[in-house]
Length: 508
Image (cartoon, rainbow, N blue to C red):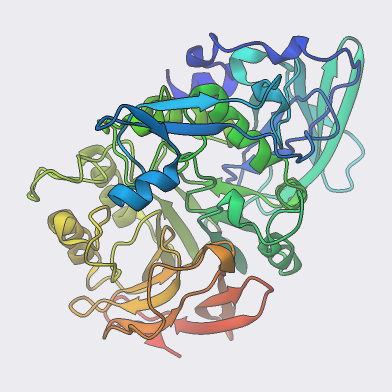
């Protein structure tokens, strides 16, 4: 199914066999308990995501969670994950799984569940302070769409703040949720731009109580970003999504965290997917693992598109005025198996995406170019990893990307995925990579804080986020990369002043 068709019709055939949640409630009033999201913002358009729900509250946390047992083929016995970690050192055993639901509990009654509701969704929008609203055509939502849709707003004005009202309707009753966003500036306009980058939001490692979520959302909001880039692992399917219904529940409880709702209501976001929010750790399109039960890689791809504002392709580029252009890459849908021997045919990006990148990069006259990948391109990474361009088993394509950028000034790599923050300078090309780190300190790890490589200019095993600002001082373009902690503190800052293409960029 083409993505344009998905955005207009908000329909996915793979969802049709699931139980309809729209018949579970007798309430008359619809709600938006999983919030709204504004994304894919350009100078003239945006996509608004919304999902109609039964109730204004999510299911309270009371210990109602599914339990999973895995079959030990050696003794034909079922055991929990702790058994396999202890006996076999396996945290994701490739074994048959059995799902046990709490007694008299269905999937829509699990902790954090937010059942959907049949109805229609439309968006009213106007320039801030304008008298009259424009309105999109109402889109019908039901169980086949997980009660979600995406409304495209077109013919917007560049560099303009818009107010929106998302309108849900069912049985002649309505509910609305407000929001706001600003469009990107025209590519010739010189305007300052500030945005955030985040990754790795593990639900069980959130750092605020109950359904409040993560501290970083409030801290990012205080800094008034123009937009956020989520580099993937928006959530983790590995241990909870053994079928499509449980995967949808996984999205419901993450989307219904109050901090998430409040942030996305007023800050547009570009969403990228990685392994955990697609299927499971280090996955690729032909991955096979009984650990995931009935849930498949392709279902995960389609579900991700359904749960966030989506564009035509999973890879895309966006221009924010004269001085900034960002590229967002997909590292899951086109990759070859990690186990495949390295060589010119082994790829993460795929031929189509690689050609698109090189063509759009060469055509751009933006002052600063920021290449954002869910996974590292420079690293360094742990030697045992085999999933990204900084690893030896993807070095051929990694070298192709790094060598292509070599000599191009004012270009920077940014990545998510790693559970620590860093700034690295590639030894051969001089290119920089900035890793934003995970969303919470509880999720930080995987690297020793005193294991500093020659590439490292900054290393910190903490949670937080990355802030990027492009602006002009005395008409000199500058870009600043700032690592923040989970409570907003500045942990590291690096500034570059743009230089002519014939000269290297100047570090400050």
